[in-house]
Image (cartoon, rainbow, N blue to C red):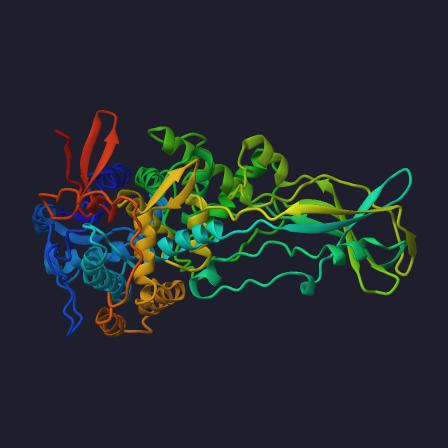
Length: 624
């Protein structure tokens, strides 16, 4: 009896699946990532037909020969590469190159016996729209990178510069934030507090009206990058007038129940942000650890932007929480998805919620524990509060003041969050709600109150904060730029090319980073944040069959070609700072990509940058 051939991406995943399915009915082989790619020495995109030219990698030749041999002795071929656009493209390449007319496409979100059985039963055909969306992304990025990088290097007289859509957006955010910091002028601003009561003193704050604040005069990328904090008043006379009141009138008194639902389970972006905030992992390190956990069958697929669990996943977690005596929410908690989310897969969760600890190293163990705790926490009951809100006005109704407090009535998920350590904020820079309680009196609308005391406090405007790895990822996600699964490559480029320096978790753009921004922003539309966001929408349209991939690439090339004709015609600032870009690193002897210098347990080593493109090339060599 012939075995069925199952093709997956990684050797580790192949071993895990082989153990689950057994060797009697299935043979599981790994493609080891992509078997072919665009050529290293040319653009690889026909600018007439906008078809892509693919060449086999050296490893791809060996892999295809192995798959072909196994297919010849198999009853059927099932292509079970990762359930995303990259996985779809790998399956498509293998099927076309080996002329597999009847190959089935199977997808699973976790590596368990149940999930594999369901995937095999529901297998179907390769989704050409997903393949074309991947081709459109790869083609547009190649057109931009291949066409602009060399002229950019020539213009700035610096070898080895690179550019790309998401990379340029990250550079723009870093540079513009740095210039906001550089041009910041610290100024005085004022707040007003009124005090009431005798034995039990409570306070109300002046609500600063819009006409007492300043408006930002920013444009373009800078306007998208600028984040206004709470309104501030820089007019001492206006603040003093708001404080000079003897009595106030209760405009509104409200007592209401309030609740705070737990944070959602992790998705790709929040997983990377949490890993950066908690342990200082860069996106690449976090994704490598998550990939290993997925391939070992320990977690569900880690490339996802859907913050909600599947019915099956949430049911299992809720049942487990009940056995642990945890307060489970009456109804499933649900969360809105980030802008442009594809929502193809559920949020990240353990394959078996009862497994408390898992992973082969510290990073994997840390990540698994957090994924598990966040998944459990997401299904617990909200914290419940009694909320009191008081709105006051002066006698003339010119000024408005507000006091609010909330008292914790039921801890819900908060007790578990505190005990487990899962409750740390995704972004420690953001103000988190406090659960302190200050008693407010019971009042009635229209009641007049005597002001016991008033105070005008002077403050100084603080410098804008530099981005951290986590906050920059969060900003890209909020703006709908790129996909969280690609951020690892983007951040690795910022570091390896010398475009950003990290100190005390903060990212500072280098001199050459600012030069690149000044060179690209006036000329190329792809360097604009809005363009990059809209490109993601277009790629989603291709994936949904609403747009042809060749049309998207054709329009990209038309615009790019026009802009290239005027590139470099203006003058650029030439700072006296030394060249901060490292010399080009060596080329990979297997595929021609650039090599990167890394550090491991046994010292420094060279690794092919193709490893970070879904392990397209895994060549490494020691530093001699």
